[in-house]
Image (tube, rainbow, N blue to C red; front, side, top):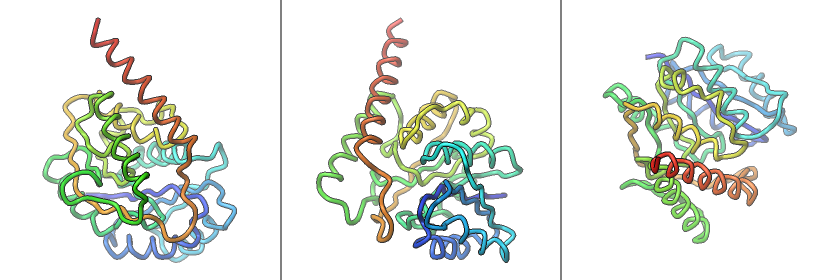
Length: 240
């Protein structure tokens, strides 16, 4: 099974060395794609330094509109066109433990089309979050699942494994979200494809120690607006 690991980055120089070491230790045969948004802190330059001696490391240096959604969309579209069986998406800020990836890949070999590293199934959780953020995330994910009819508890998790043939037939390039709503929109497209087996495995999400979170009120607001709109459209179609 050919595996590609993809991580969108912006100002992650403080984390990139440890991240690459952890992924390489767990998946020595995987190709790793860093999709960097012209990070002013030199993340891309540091990846190039590593890549000079590591042919399995590739940098996708973006010059277009910045943002998690744009970087993820470009990375997933590019990688899904290559000869890989599975693409794993993971954050570079060390909030996701790469040691979980082999378990996710096992689920793929057992028939899953998509595997989500979930905070909200038995055994999952978060560390170093305020009570407000915990409640906001829980309610947001519950609302998203209900409004969109998704059989998933953690709709906004970015730690995922996809079969590449699933990505090809759901046309990730057609997604339109500009923030973390991209994760929900991708899940919605995949669920609409039908005959898709989605599995959630428990993870403990650890809040970043270095760098700044990209989450803000604008991103949260966009996500809730889009989920509400998509949900109303879904209910309207169901009522016809």
